[in-house]
Image 1 (spheres, rainbow, N blue to C red):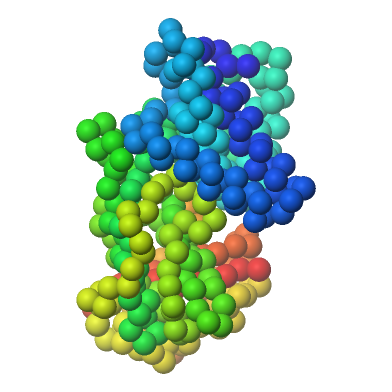
Image 2: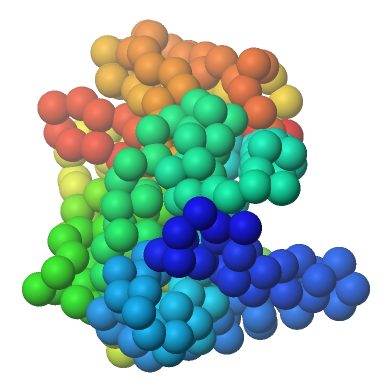
Amino acid sequence: SYAEWGDVWLSEGFATFSEQLFADRFHGPAAARTVRAQTISRVTNDPCGMLYVNDTSRSDSLFDGRRVYAKGAGVVTMLRDLAPHDSLFFTGLRTYQQLYGNGHARTSDIKAIMEHYYSMNLDTFFNQWIYGRGYPVYTTTWNQKGSKVIVKLVQAQSCPAHTGHFTTPIEVQLRTASGDTTIRLYNTADTQLFTFTWFPAVTSVVLNPNSITVCKQNGNVRKDTSLVALTGNMLKRSELKVFPNPSKNHWQIDQLPEETALVLTDNNGRTVWQGTSSKGSTTIPGERLPTGNYFLKMTDNSGSESIQLVRW
């Protein structure tokens, strides 16, 4: 149980989160996604809701359905999503249960356990989502020029008087006639432009398609033909070749200008490798990386571009 009433989300939020686990186990991923979407809808009906309960004198504050139950479930979903491997999230929960199952836990206790297993600092996450108010509100636009897809995110905050920018992963799905792909972005600024190499013709873009991040879309995601990718020499090279992709061991890039700065990041925005391109072909090592999606940022004096690499 929780050590103080303000930490009530540790029981009620995690219990509500388990509803999607049940839905996924017995009804499938689509059912779990529906549960998450319904949870987000409840959270976003309270623009200035805060998960941690400061006013513990009133039962309606302690057991607020939108703030403690729904937002608690949404925050646990995002905490799970931050895990470098999904198994680490559940390993952390088992440790948490073993240490505090017959005692009293505080928010700082679950934070310390997850920081240990994730090998990352979670100050920003907890300050934003447990002790902060509201959620991000996105205006999303996109365009495609040849093999370049540009996605622009403009973030506002639902409770701007009390909360600043939410630094957070966010997924976008590119839909095409030949199939869809979901790309994980790391939103670090209120206005941010992302450019990808993607050859199929995009018909539409969906923000947060799996209902992972607690957020709201401002209006519809729309195509904006005024969005143009940087047009430096590197970014105009449609002959850039990356193979194999997906890969089990490494990726090779051909036709990349020499001395291009390369930074490979994981889904949480953490740098897992960096280097510079060689003349002719450049090898990006991946044999020691966990399976999953990665992003390679390529930067030279003409600008930057990111491409998705998949390790399987």
